[in-house]
Structure formats: C-alpha cells, structure tokens
Amino acid sequence: MKKKKNVHAIYNIHLLLGVACLPTSSRLRRLPLLFAGAVVILLAVFAFISFLSPPITNHQLYHTDRHSLNTVLGVRANVQNEIVFRIPKHGGSLIHELWSSSNAKYYYGCSKASRDFRSAELKTNPDSYLMIATSGGLNQQRTGIIDAVVAAYILNATLIVPNLDKNSYWKDKSNFSEIFDIDRFISYLSKDVKIIKQLPEMEGNVMTPHNMRVPRKCDPTCYENRVSPVLKKKHVVQLTKFDYRLSNQLEKNLQKLRCRVNYHALMFTDSILQMGRKMVERMRMKSKDYIALHLR
Ligand SMILES: *[C@@H]1O[C@H](CO)[C@@H](O)[C@H](O)[C@H]1NC(C)=O
Ligand SMILES: *[C@@H]1O[C@H](CO)[C@@H](O)[C@H](O)[C@H]1NC(C)=O
Image (cartoon, rainbow, N blue to C red; front, side, top):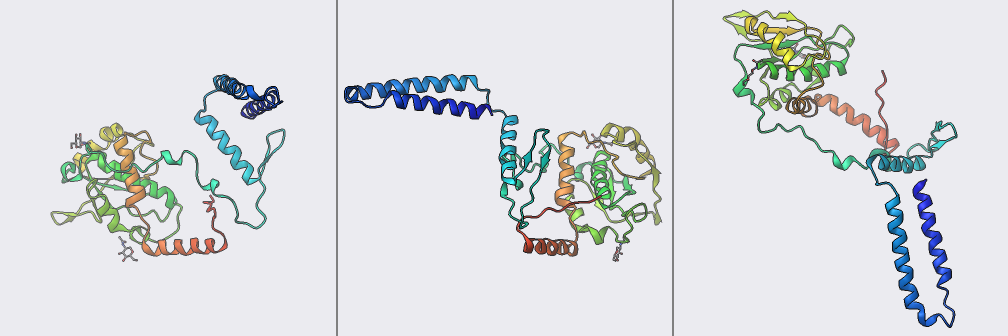
C-alpha cells in the first residue's frame, strides 16, 4: 500500500510540473532552463522518497510475490482476512508462478561429499555389522533406511540391506529388492558406507544379531556411547523399531550423506518407476499442471 501511495505522489508532482511548464509565448525561450530546474526538483523528490521508504527485504519480496500470486489465482480476502480460492472453471489453466518461487534460484543441490569426508574403505571395521528392523509405512521405513546408512557411517560398521517391515502397518509382502533398486543402493553408496545383502557366515556359522533399541533422535555421540561398545563386543547389532532414531541436528557431512541416500541411492525399481510415469502421463493428458496429494 505504502508503495502505491509513493507512486501516486510522484505522479501528482509530474502533473504539477507539467502545468507549470505549459509553454506560453513569453516563456518559450526560458523553456530549457525551466526543464532543467524541473529535472533537478524531480531528482530531489525521488531521493527524498527513497530515503523515506524502508529497504526491500526478503520479507517484503515474499509478500509482493504472494500478492501477485493471489491476484492471478483469484484469491479474495474479505475484511476478516478469510481467504477464498476461486478454482479455474476449466481445470488446468493455473499459471506458472504457482510452480516456482522468486527465491528458487538461490537453492542448489548440495549432496556431494566434502573432501574431508572419510571413505568407507578407510574406516569400516572388518567385523562390525549393523542391521535395522524397519517400522511403519513405506515412507517411514524409507526414512529409517536413510538413517541406518548414516548410523552405519557413524559406527564404522557394514550395513546389511534392511528387510522391510511387512507386519506393523504396511501390509505388502514385497521385499526390499522388489521396491528399491538394491544394486544401485549398494553401489551408489560404496564410497560412503559398505553395504551387503546378507549377513556373512563366521567360521561356517550364521551369526545371530544382538538386538537393542536406541532412543529417539539419538545423536552421533549417543550412537558412539550406546551402540559402539556393544558392537565391539557382539559384532552384529540389530537396532529394533528403527523409526526416527537419528537426530535431525547433524553436522553438514552427515546431512549430505542423508541427501545422497534419499535423492540418489534409494531409487524405486524400474517397474514402479514405469507405473509412476504412466500415471503422470495420464494426468498430463488432462492438464499440463497437476497436484499429487499424499493423503494420510
Ligand atoms: C570410526 O573411525 C574413525 C576413524 O576413521 C574414528 O575416528 C572414530 O572414532 C570411529 N568411530 C567409532 C564409533 O568407532
Ligand atoms: C525378494 O523377492 C524376490 C522375488 O519374489 C526373490 O527372488 C528374492 O529371493 C527375495 N529376497 C529376499 C531377501 O527375500
């Protein structure tokens, strides 16, 4: 609103100057001088206005954007600020602003390991194996798998590809390799964490994991204090009910590892991707833009 007022003020000054400068025959010769004077006054007014108006901050940008977005979307706000959305009649013509943001250009992918990140080859202890018992729906299990990779990194352990939880919530009998590309998962992370498909046999015997549970949001020190000593003694540890068992406050290297797992290593199998593409194609046939909702 403030901006608009300023614009009006400038506009009015323009008009005034325009009137003052109306060329009558006697004033005609003094016109260049008058013009120069007007320019000087205008510049002074501009300087004054820009001095008075607050600097443009991100906050303000955000509001400006929202305002323009709302206008195009046809959002109406009444006195109580109750927002009413007007859905376009023919479905799909919502403009592009909806799919981008003015700050998007400042974001970039940052999952690449820094130079000081220690490689799996150098740090993995030969006789420590980490297993997890995933828990919950597929989404929650996926988060658990991502955290398990980071936990194995913290513990210098080899990770066994997790089995999916088929009982507690997600009643689907598919195993890991039917949902995720297991070879990609292992090879993509090979420099970060050693991952194998099955627990190896030790002197001809199948090793039995020692079960234990870590507290929720356990941080690296918590893993080092609680799990590491057990792992040194038992060699195979399975962390049970492994959901949200790793802190969200991790140093950058570990967060980047999380990103590598989630966005690069853990991919759905080709048949699932194909099905996904087919669904997207069908939606695109109806409209260029669409929204997918995860209902829960
Ligand atoms: C993992 O290995 C690094 C050395 O590569 C060591 O500094 C760190 O203490 C080890 N962590 C555990 C939990 O053994
Ligand atoms: C996963 O399922 C596939 C296909 O049913 C099967 O061939 C494979 O042995 C299973 N893997 C495990 C670890 O159960």
